[in-house]
Image 1 (spheres, rainbow, N blue to C red):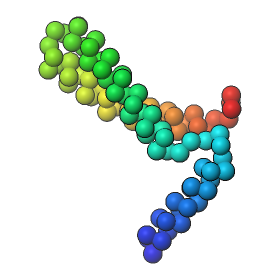
Image 2: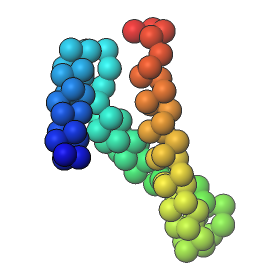
Image 3: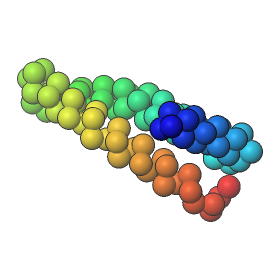
Image 4: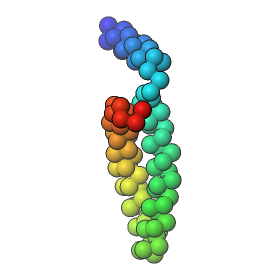
Length: 87
């Protein structure tokens, strides 16, 4: 029963995204968040290392930065996807 509801909801979502060309699927937002965070984390790692001179500390800072900003970016993308301005 629950599996049936999940499959029905997936079908509705798939149809919704195929009809709405101005929106993107959540998995696309996840992929964009991860790829951007890899770039951003490398930047944070390098800056942290230059400022501290300690790779372990820089890696700790970059690790925390990676997780928190990936979530923030995902929700930021999903919110902007609901705004019609500029579409």
